[in-house]
Each structure stands twice: as structure tokens, then as C-alpha cells.
Length: 389
Image (tube, rainbow, N blue to C red; front, side, top):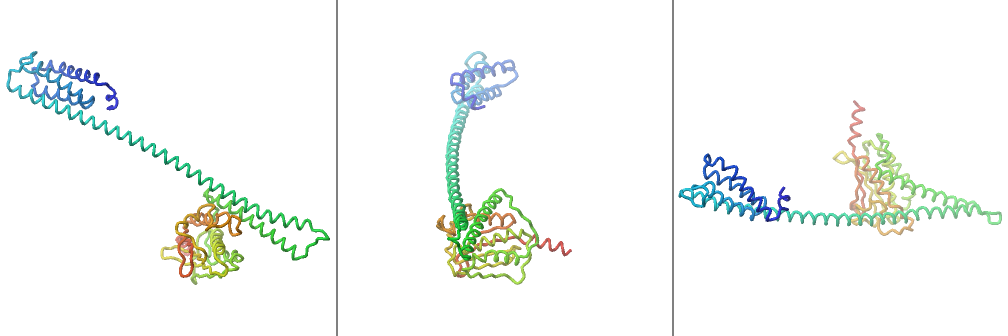
């Protein structure tokens, strides 16, 4: 409403103020014999205040002057003259003049301050919108940069992880197919080529499983087949699967004599432990020790820890390694140890989907890096209690 009145020009505001005073006089004149001078003065003073508040100090001053004149002319004896006969009316008249002028100026001042405040608010909102737009543009640029980085990493990984095994398979198959009586291969050579085909096929299968796994994690569609499972069996399966990767390392397993069962998807937890052992072997020198420890905590959680004596992970990168297509250190894309950088991403998705969490911290004693998985045991206890009942 105030913004509407602020659009009225100064001449128009003065005319409206005069009209308001005139209208007030017309209303009060028929009751002149029934109201006293003070009541008339207060009514005209309200007109001055409204004029100042709505239209500014000039309109208020106009209303004050018109009110002073009309008050004297119509409501102070002798009527219809500008003289005042009663000394008491002089006091009322003087008080009205002072109050009208001061009140009009104060109302006008308050209105100006309110307008200035609105102007400042408008500027602040404008700046906020500019900043918001700038931040959105920066966010879009950063998102685009990350998207391009992910696309590049995916393209490099796909190129390497598909082309390299396919090249090896193609070369081995071509050699075997091109064998003639003159260029026959001995049994050992044939077996070597067949082993290459077998290993590279496994690499392709791992690549496809990794891509499918990360797609499931991102879609929140990780397949879980929960059951009350033995922790010892889960660990034994993971260690057996990682036997080839651990062949050049010394694996130390530390578990208590009795471990409570977990209500989890045993296959996916075993897959996670295998991933951690595989990473520990990849990034540790031959002959180094790898430690796998499992123990329950006082907060009804089961901790699975894998420690290695490898190159370590800086603190600033310990969260990043769980992101897609992130590789530890400065691994060359052509390095046989390099992969898609999805293993830890999938591991985190598996652990979190079963109510747990995973993180990296400093290793204990002479170990460098420690990866910790923590899974809840409460559901297992509840189910055991229910079965026993």
C-alpha cells in the first residue's frame, strides 16, 4: 500500500491532504455545538499524521497549515474569522500548531526512513540474486568439470580394461588357430595361451561386474539376501578368493575364539573383504605384511579391519578414494594394478546398505593404512533371542 502512495507526485499529495482536511471539516461542522475545541484539534491532528505518513512531510505540512486555518476559522469563536476571542482558545490553538508541525515532521521522517529501508532491502535482494546466480553458474561449471573428468576417467578405464584383455585374448586365439604342422606348439605353450585367455576373460568379467555393481549402488538397488551368517565362513571365503593376490604377501588373521553371527548378506560382505585384501596387496610391496582383524565392539558393532604396509593414503584423500573412478596414488592407467577405481565405491555402498559404515585411518604399530568396516550386530542378537524363545 505504501508503495502505491509513493507513486503519487508531490502536488497530488498536497491536494489529497487539503481534500482530507476539507472533508474532516465538513463532517465536524454539523456537530460544532456538541464537540469542544480539543476534540476537533485531535481529529485534525490525525489527518496531519496520516498525510505525513502516507505522502511525506510536505503533504503533512500542507495538512497542518490547512488544519490550523480551518480550525481557527470554523471552530474557534468568533466563527468565520481568523481572530480568537477566548484566551483559553489561544492555548489550544498554539498547542495544535506545535503538535501538528512536530507530528507531521516526525511522521514524514519515519516515512523517509521506511522508504530508505525498503530501498536498501531491494538492493540487498538484488545483490543476493546476483550472488545466487553467480554461485549457480559456478556450481554448474564445477558440475560440468567433474562430469567431464568422470567421462574422461571412464573412457580411459573402459579403453584400457576392455582393449587390453581383448588384445591378449585375440592374440592368443589367433596363435592357437594359426597353428600348422610346421608351426605346431608344444603342450606347455598351448596351456600358456589358454591360461592367458582364461585370465583375461576373468578381467573382462570383473570389469562388467564392477560396472553393474556401481550402477546398482547408485540406483540403491543392491541385491541383499540377508541371513544369519557365520563371520568365520565369510572371512574364509574372502581369504580363499584372494589367495592368488596375496601369494607374495604375508597375511595375518586375528579373530577372537568366538564371534557372534551376523544377519547380513554374506556374499556381499565377503566381496567387500576381498576388495580390501586385493587393494592392500596391490598397493603394498612384495613380502610385506597384511593384517585382517575382526572383533566386536562395546557398542554392539562388529569391526572388520584390513591393514597394510603400503604407500599410505594422505588424510585429504581418504574420503576421495571412495568416489567413482578414483585410484590410489599416481597409478598409470596402463599399469596392471590400475582398474576402474570402483572397488571402494562399491564396498561403501554394500556396507552402508546393511546399516554399517566404512572409513580409512592410520594403521597400528608398523602398518601404514587401516581400512575399517563396522556392521551392526543388534539384529542378529534379536533374532537369536527370538529363536531361543
